[in-house]
Image 1 (cartoon, rainbow, N blue to C red):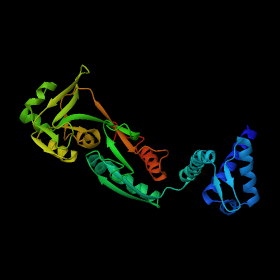
Image 2 (image 1 turned 135 degrees about the horizontal axis):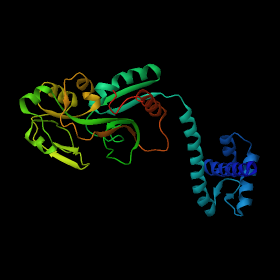
Image 3 (image 1 turned 180 degrees about the horizontal axis):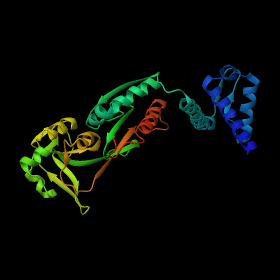
Length: 309
């Protein structure tokens, strides 16, 4: 195996010498570029031609130019050398200390309630990184809008992105005891259409809730919405005040549920579980700053979810 590796390295050196001669237009400038003697460059090129059994360069007293076969070989050799250079750069980049601006898009509800203190602690540990955190409830186009990564809750709609599951959250129907006293408690999913429902205004599904019935069947509940807003915290506040029924993730309602401010609406419904993901653009490697933040998230949320917040 070591002998085979040595042969491969010799071939790469021969390729580099030949390609540099073509790039520089002669042996003298190629030698200066590579930092070796002119005779060493000539020896590498001659060895390459002997091994291939073909003349790759036209040599005159005034200039050196590739032959027709040499041009074809040069194109392929340059690709190989560029790939080798990228491989070296990749290793260097992956081992470098995380630094630079990390621009991320975060689902508004998760960013406000849980992510802010984590980001603060992360910045304290990684002094060479700065963070630009943009809270949005819509799915941004990471590459075209200039984001390094995003934190998303729910199903992954774009399969071209790379994703790491950070944790999970459950989602359930909640309402305040005061609401039940005034409007009664729905006994089954079909009863919801007769109640005051609190909706997100920016859901792609409009005012449609997808709820799993006790039978395991997925049901859709459509309502005009007694109140429609674009953030979950406002919906939770409205539910606590007895204004209606909300369908929210556990990281929002867990404290209000523990304090008795809200209750389960239909207690025998299966819990709906949603993944919370860090997503980032596809590529040959993950930027150190992105990798560092995702690893930090995994550590901080290791004991969180789906109901423990």
